[in-house]
Image 1 (spheres, rainbow, N blue to C red):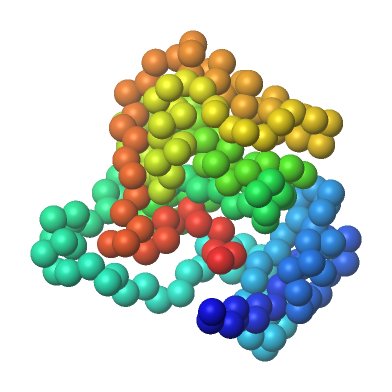
Image 2 (image 1 turned 45 degrees about the vertical axis):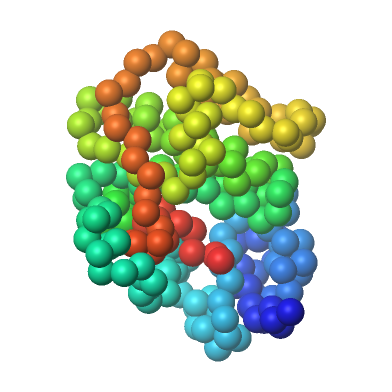
Amino acid sequence: MAKKKKKYYTVWKGHHTGVFETWDDCKAQIKDFQGAQYKSFSTFEAAKKALKGNYKDYIGKSKTFKSTLTEAQLKKIGKPNFHSISVDAASSGNPGVMEYRGVDTKTKKQLFIQGPFKEGTNNIGEFLALVHGLALLKKKNSDVIIYTDSKTAMSWVKKKTCNTKLERNEKNKDVFELIDRAIDWLKKNEYKTVIVKWETKAWGEIPADFGRK
């Protein structure tokens, strides 16, 4: 089994800020901290440099991507439609600290962000992000499309439900309140927005990705 590459974690906002050498140490700083800001880096030097900078300059920054698909496959898929917004979620654990956001696909300008929440899952975050995006676009009477890299979220939205196995408790009360509101919105509203699957293998990580992988 290949040895897992070591990561270093920069915490800009948390119980304590700084660079931490383990995920457990990082998690201790962001757990139950509203508005925590953190990201992983492959080297200590990069993490230390980031700490001196601004969180917003690093979130969503992905590595150089080179598709492994053939030219024929790439041609068939085509390029992303930049007349769109993209949504994504991040969860540190399953369940774990969860947040989601939406951005302009071309500029990556952040349009909305929610969390971090104490307990959620990536699927829940993807679902909430997608519904949030749909509601925003309908409110603006926008004709742009919306990208998600989650087939699960697309399925849940289509079925107007959230088939999570996560059980309700006091810790995730706020998350389930959002789920209830999202399902209620889907049942009461019609929308013309086209939901499209983001082609990660062809285009790399979705623009709304939190860049913490």
